[in-house]
Amino acid sequence: MIKKFRVPFDQKIKLKDYDPDDTDEYKESGDVRDQFKEFNMRMIDLQEVMYAEKKHGLLIILQAMDAGGKDGTIKHVMRGINPQSCRVTSFKIPSDEESSHDFLWRYHKAVPPRGYVGIFNRSHYEDVLVTRVHKLISDKVAKERFNQINEFEELMTENGITILKFYLHISKSEQKARLQERLDNKDKHWKFSKNDLRERSQWDEYMDAFEDVFNNCSTKHAPWYIIPSNHKWFRNLAVAKILVQAMEDMKMSTPKPEEGLEKLVIE
Amino acid sequence: MIKKFRVPFDQKIKLKDYDPDDTDEYKESGDVRDQFKEFNMRMIDLQEVMYAEKKHGLLIILQAMDAGGKDGTIKHVMRGINPQSCRVTSFKIPSDEESSHDFLWRYHKAVPPRGYVGIFNRSHYEDVLVTRVHKLISDKVAKERFNQINEFEELMTENGITILKFYLHISKSEQKARLQERLDNKDKHWKFSKNDLRERSQWDEYMDAFEDVFNNCSTKHAPWYIIPSNHKWFRNLAVAKILVQAMEDMKMSTPKPEEGLEKLVIE
Image (cartoon, rainbow over all chains, first blue to last red; front, top):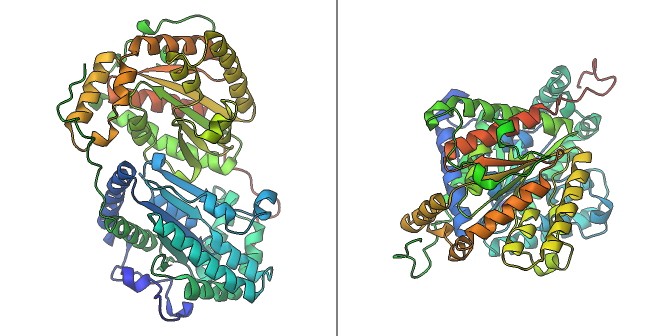
């Protein structure tokens, strides 16, 4: 499952070859409930060791179209995580100060230190997505930024930070249903923004921009995963599985005691 | 229970009148399990409304002697909280940059915005506790700082941030047992620091410094709570109860929809 959703490093993909309705071998949420719970408990344990050891960190990058499930993924997949060593950063329109710096500046500041799990709700990829669709940058600048992003991410991984990049892949009709639900359900009204409709009208341009991102920035040190996300239960399972696998791969252990503590008795 | 543990604003207290073994009307952890679970679920719901409404914020300040249970309180009481709108800041020895500023500077930067729950694991109170016990500041400076802290906290509350300050009150013998456990259990070794023994040797000086803090900085806008913490299950219950009550008192509701959205149909 992990390999299936990982964008290969050495060949071009077409986004239309990835089915947002895919649920692998499962039929319904009940089929994965126990498995998801196990991943969740494993993640909580591994996070504790990560914090104790402070050799590894994890950066999770979430990108999606509006209503694609970024907030929901954080809420459900990270449920139970110790907030002490988890930091979520949501990136909105840059402030004046942020715009006065190079585009990576504000993301660099938010990178998790070793021992921590960091989550970017939107990320530096917005600077090659929304800016590109709205023609604020040229294709040439976008290409330069792909290289800058790859270098930036490599720097992080060399410092012990594992990077996982998830694109939560929904269909245009699924987005329609979710946005309509936000309008029709008064408890969800606050999530609706008229601006989402403008972005929706450029769906195809976004798909092209995303495809270009995947084909330029899925690297061995920081792979992209295209997660079928029309079914939330499957999205949560897939993200949790990849997350836990990445943390297992760190081969972490709680630090050894300082010398000379063995026989110490507290007075 | 809430009133019992809140340090009064208009009279002096003696820390020795607060029993760290107190468990109110309960005998054992089983007695409070269901109640704690209810508080926890209520907190999660209220946090979601807080984030949607963005009118109120919450700052939880945790102080205690070493092994008093600051980390454990975050882990257990905040379990299930959505990390997206929760920020924990652990304050250690100030960096060079931080020391070059006034003592409140680094704390001010970490204050949660409206819509968020912030947790300070240690806080500006360290600047009138550890500094005082180690005689790095005079009593006169401490008095000035009490006033500065009260003004700082009032400023926050006027901006919609509710402040809850918890002192996790353990006995000296309970600390001994917990430090010994950290030495004897190899999974907990990493939590042990020889430095804790030095601080332990100044237990009485710390109690005096804490008492002075409570008698000067428990205010109507930002009360101190002395939580009996020898029994972790009771500590968690008491903190959760006070937390939920404070969030209920905010009388929050999800924001009303923008005008003209009622009949909108997504294309």
